Figure (cartoon, rainbow, N blue to C red):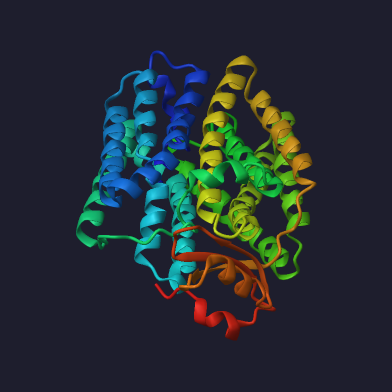
Length: 428
């Protein structure tokens, strides 16, 4: 993820080095990885169930390295686009999450998944800082060569330090299931959250078509100094969003703060599309990144709380696909609007998208504080097992699949009768 993100803050500044550069091709270069990621994310996860995690992960990293090398050696925008598409084809996120499930106990799994989410957030912040520094010394090709090196390091880490399991246990809380996709695509709350992550990453990618050049041309911030500007914006945005995050979780005000954050992003886009000035521009970018950080952290948490029992793996697969499709759509839309109009047109178009998302989110229901427990199915009939678990105080929903040894119960931890459910908890 660090390698994929490092291009965002610098590509717009180096596009003139390519003779065939156009604003549309710039946007396509930024977003094309999202299309290949979206297409292959769930299929590669399912493939790893059949042939094992290791071949898919190593193959994905090798493809990522190959794409980085192709992009580093490219002398046209078309070559860059091909390299970025290859990078995205190394779509191993769902397989890595499945591997994490194989290697962790139920008690530690939530913390392990949270650590991966935190590492992705950290990689985005580091990429905004490191990308401009590398580019200032080594040019855009240097960013891709470093990315290829990171991919090789990932392969070494996997081969030398990641344990192997001969027969991983299927856990639907972490894996995608084709049988569940249609049902989840009809679930209103999940649909709204998937639309949300699509719109959020569309906005991010579209704005990065114009932000680097805007900082350089209008504010006089050179490529060598971009890193500290991004550090201040992202760091300040993180600090600014923390109080909203704490208050929304502590007092159950998720929906009002969520909709307000969308409104703040839309307002920042409107201002950037109509007024300019050093202080005003930087202030609006700070608002944009603060709201982005808040929504990026809130959406997956909301999704996890809202998805039906035993469906989190599939729901997260659809969510990730929507996210990558949003990145692709944002790059294409941003490049097209920059070519047809100007940077103001990009910001105003993104504002319209965000406003539509905000209206679409008004019907969202705040998530209840429910958690999923994985249970070990006993030797009794499934119907009897479901009846026993359903009668335990605090159990809201239960899902059992025929022929499988695990069941999934959605519970309210505040009212759950832990003594009654304890004998059925899965210990693996």
